[in-house]
Image 1: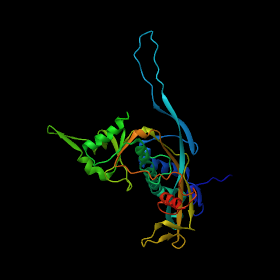
Image 2: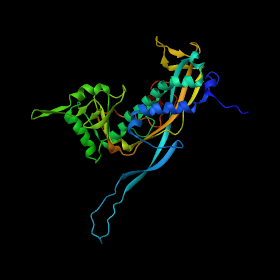
Image 3: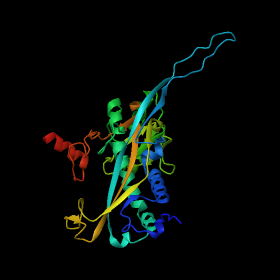
Image 4: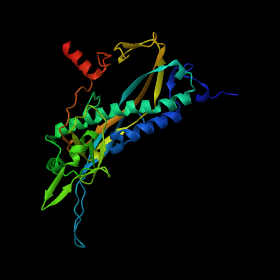
Length: 327
């Protein structure tokens, strides 16, 4: 009788690499999608491989008043073919042998929130803020390209000016991205006319000017920054599941002990769990987004480790760019 693989009866010490069991991979990806701001607001595009071309509607179409015998005019609709490419995202987590002696199902259920958080934070920072961004585009880059960034403090008039950057391009925003540190300023975004105070911020309903608002947890997004846009022009895809490997033959230069020394897996009787996934993102219309006090994109596309210069620096993409510049 053929034997089937049962993750409940196998530990990671017995099976040190492979794909995360389907059930737990799906649950981990679901947790990523539920917490990632890109995935909450953007449009999911199914992908069968690491690259996909598809058509997106840009503008066009219209209705006309006509007489019974009049020829009906037509308006040319504008479509464009875009290509979305997935990039590999990896997380390394130090774990003790005790955890690796658990059955695979129990282990990945326990590690699910830690793996998911590492992935969605890194993905959001790249796509929204351009931080260590491996993709051709980010919202930060689109805002710079479209010239839709403004500067100033968060107040009533500034928020309306930010929205006007979109309305001027015939874009209706469907979401804001803020951060918790902006709450105080947003509560003060009030205008009083004829003794009547009008506030743009509704914290209980999570809206600014009646528009859905989500908070991004990231030190890279400065306090006082906002992103507004129509997120129907932001696409993302997840073409494959999650893979893992376990190793004890390395030193983790990006993670340190309390005394500041790098974690040595062999000396400290620990293992490194490496989990990878592929994820894609694409902005199809730069003018669909505007920013207040936005950061600039790192502009390190195609200078990732593996493109000529490898790095173990915590800020690997920027470090690689510097290394290339010094060659």
